[in-house]
Amino acid sequence: QVQLVQSGAEVKRPGASVKVSCKASGYSFSSYTMHWVRQAPGQRLEWMGWISAGNVNTKYSQKFQGRVTLTSDTSASTLYMELSSLRSEDTAVYYCVRGPGTYFDYWGQGTLVTVSS
Amino acid sequence: QSALTQPASVSGSPGQSITISCTGTSSDVGGYNYVSWYQQHPGKAPKYMIYEVSNRPSGVSNRFSGSKSGNTASLTISGLQAEDEADYYCSSYTSSSTYVFGIGTKVTVL
Image 1 (tube, chains in turn brown, blue):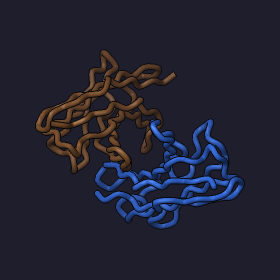
Image 2: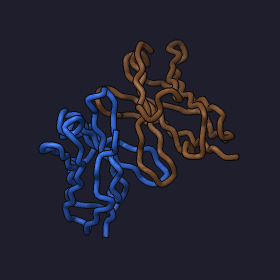
Image 3: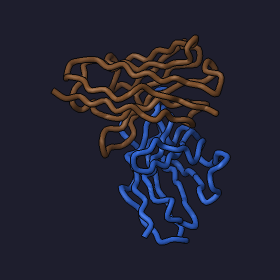
Image 4: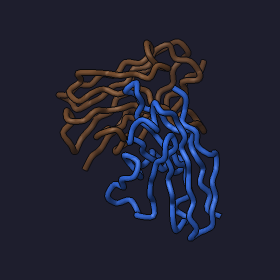
């Protein structure tokens, strides 16, 4: 079955960077676009960006442009999301999500990133 | 990209039907049949319930249905059950090749 297993919770200082990983299994990793979505405590879902199948293209939300980098290691079936210049407003649960089309079918368990001095 | 507009809360009694609206613009909801809906229980990851406006994934109850008219999409839950109490989010593909979520609607079963 499809599984997306993310790395553990992180605590970072303001101004630092964080890199979250997401290991996929149970399907052909290179055949699907993957997305990252975040959710601040008590807030709505927020789409951050996608990386195309085969790691060819990326597209980022204008809100995160310049601060977020999505990469993948197809040999390890693993995705990465790096967010830089962290501020307190970046405290959120970050999800990796599979995108079979223009929707999101399988979600990782989420990674809590806390930004605090 | 502004969030899609949803009512903050909707409630209904068991067995009733409720409808959640999701309003965007011609650059997102109105421009494409690429609206999807997600159910999220507290502390859990979202689960997709409807894709491409009105398609239901296998395993999702046929009590859930979706539609769209102009710039507004809707999710209807019929025969409301206690387990339907959750937050619901709509999402749409946009003309910028990005995605946008709604602000979310809390469904309460009275």
